[in-house]
Image (tube, rainbow, N blue to C red; front, side, top):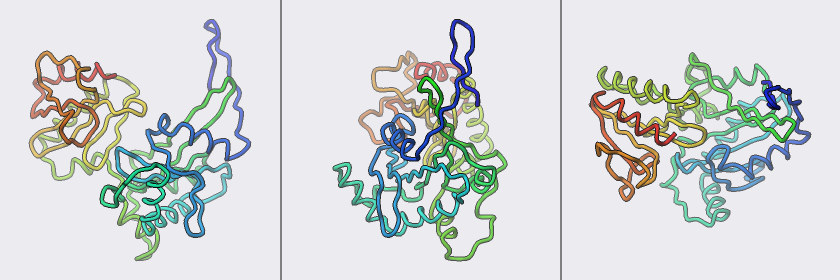
Length: 302
């Protein structure tokens, strides 16, 4: 990736300033976890048994823990370490809860955590083709994020996306009761197919209509399927979230009460009602009759 500075319509190529130490990357991430990934920082150098986790974080939206490891060595096998650390989390859940409660001065309970959405993120200035290919499974809870530093204090962070044709890790033969077997059984990486499964053609087509309309609003809106809904994000924030029901779609618009102009009164206030996704406005649709109007509501959030 080339990064330029614009000086009076003249582009100047910024030179990369490589990180000298992993600790530089770790400090940068830990100081900006909420901005980078909408995550809550829990602990740096979290030690458990004979292992040391670089950064322990918590995802409030998914109600799950996130392990972050920083790498400058391009020769390591990220999948081996990733599977080992994810198993460590599943085996010693109580230790993670205690650390969260002590570090964040909270009272998180075991049944409030969705362990199935746990994941590990590897952060490095570059990954090899082997590392990328070894983690290119649609349902493997291991993510690779590339970070680079340039002149003028410019930082780029690029989560590496899996290919659209990425296979399932469950297709790979592995020993029963092995660490990989446990991870594939207990951890779930949700995708659109998870939500579309068993839905009739009418609901699937309705979802496609709303999905395409949302994505057409801005080129930088991305899809992030969660356990209970599909989130459409711009940057770190949800714009709108969709839950597929048997005959309709339930949408949550991520705006605070009083910040959405809805003259047709299609949405309802759920600011004081328990609901799954972020935002104080909810509506249910069973057709595309108000699609254009609903998109005008979504535009207000962009």
